[in-house]
Image (cartoon, rainbow, N blue to C red; front, side, top):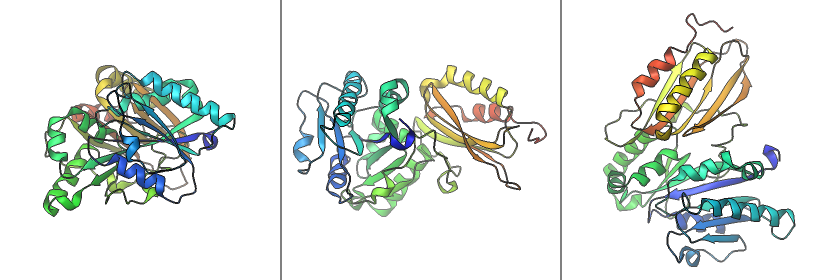
Length: 331
């Protein structure tokens, strides 16, 4: 299937009690004119979240055998395959899929499913990971739970709920902390799931074929005042990369730090190429594509974002600088 005909998939994640089901209710009840297939994952033998969902005509599939990121990953592939078969046969109709994970799930294996399973990757397009954060309990959850930090680190969009239950100072502190953990994900506050759906649907956060225009307002360097395992940093360069050196360096970093490199992406100026190179990856899986051509007289700049667990940012920066052309040549 072409990119335009692939079914977009939104992965909805967030720690226990953050408000994922409330947001899902909001999406299903919105008059957006689309039919949505929902895959739910409840950790434990009996799922209860479906009882909280609004009555709707959407296709809802529950996965009750365990955490979606580990023991039932095969079930996720199977369910997506079955939905595709039934849609092709005309038995059901939907325009997009939303996967709601348990609050204890690590998003990485779910995202990797769309990279490694050919059938899933051909039929579906992982559009974005949307993470809901509970403003009241997030500081303690981020301190105590590795999964909560992973969910923030992987997010393409972060939605903060229950901000009305904390002081403005506490909300500002949480906002600063979230931006320190994930510099590339826009953060917005939601009130019981009432948010602009354009912020969370058709984000194209994982679409390698799209032109990834990285917005500078959420890619500014941030101070890391917290001791979170998950943090982010940005690399910028006005000299072009030597592609051979860059590939060699990134391969070495993936070998050593791949398990801790949660998300990374960028738009690159490569010596000798007339167009941008767009790249991104999840852990050990990395891909690239050609983007828009550089215009005559346009300032050419590379911007790369790395989000990971205890990554040695200075080592990355020094290594990337060593991959740049020495004299700024474009060819």
